[in-house]
Structures are given as C-alpha cells and as structure tokens.
Image (cartoon, rainbow, N blue to C red; front, side):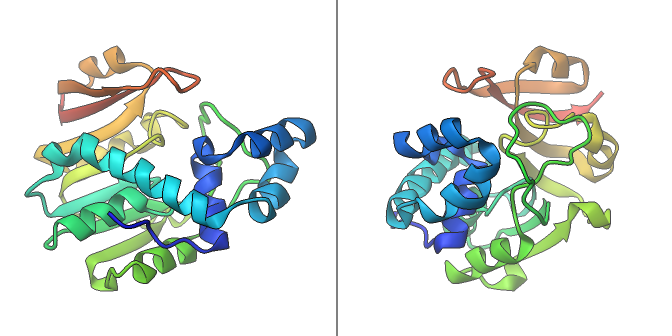
Length: 230
C-alpha cells in the first residue's frame, strides 16, 4: 500500500497521537524541554514529514491486519478516538460499501499526558484535520460523519463494528461511554479496544476475546473484541 498523504499539521497530530513515531532526537528533545514545548513546537518543526507519513502508514496497515477478519463484510462502523483516522481510512479503501461515524475531540491539550484520564479531558486532534485527511486521501464525505465529543450530540444508529484503538479504557475510563454503547450495540456488534485489564471485561460482556498483546507499551496492553453486554 502507498503511504498515506500527510501534510505538516497532520504529521504533527499523528506524532502526538502515536508517540512511537518519534525518532530518538525528538524523544530526547521532549525529555530535555518538557512535553509542553514538545507538543507546541518540536513536534511541528523538527519532524521529517515523509518519514512520519511512511511510518504512520505502516503502523496503520499493521493495525488493519490485526482486525481484518473481524471487520470484513461489515458495513456500519463507529470509531471513538480515531485520531486523524489512518486505520479507518484503510478500512474505507479496502471495503467500498462501508461507512464510518467518528466521535472525536476538537483540540490539542496544552500538555501531552499518558495514562488514564478519568474525565476524558485530554485531546490531540482537530476535526477539520480529520475531515481533510480523509478527503485528501480519496474518501468522499458521504462515506463518513464526524461528531464532536464535547457537544454530546452522539449518533443513535446501531453499529456493526465499534473501534477504539488505544483510546477507550486505555486513556480514559470505559464507564464514560458504557451507557451510550449499550444503546448502539446490537447482539452481533463487535467492540474492539485496548485495555490493561482484560479480565475485568469478562464480567461486563458475554464474549471477550484477546486479539493482540502489546508488551512494548508502558502499560503492556491487550486488545480485546467484545460482544453482548451482560
């Protein structure tokens, strides 16, 4: 697959959302000068856009391969905390009859924080950039819709697949969305997300399958696919 098209702003957002894209020099600058300057300055002007585009494309392709068996032949998708939408873009390009609904933040936090945010106040995205990214990579706007998390005007459709990669329960508490998910998940809906506590969700869902284990992340997360609230 060809590299996804990123401009400087998109490359910066991709880096903030997936810190593994940072090279050793950027990681050193973040350590020396702090995360505020890193998010505002170094992540924008000290980057190789082509390199980040290439690495981000490979990363998203790997994510796609991890879930391809689950999403094949599905049509109506919800993505929570997609970032600039690289994984979702690949799904849209590979399966022509799919539609994505995005629930996203519309600001970049002053400081990059890693770990669990109980109130979901952290954000590293701009909705206009998500929209631009999809369009500039050949996706027509009738194939997706974007909702601002802070406006609380969430879609009420039933979805076939709900995806929240390194977002739901990884950066903020699952309970923030639990009541909403109960409304939009049908019996066949598959919910895919990353967590550091997979055993906890066996008490919440009837079916829980670990589809990926990541020992490189700080919290050594696992990706699970869940069906049917108990």
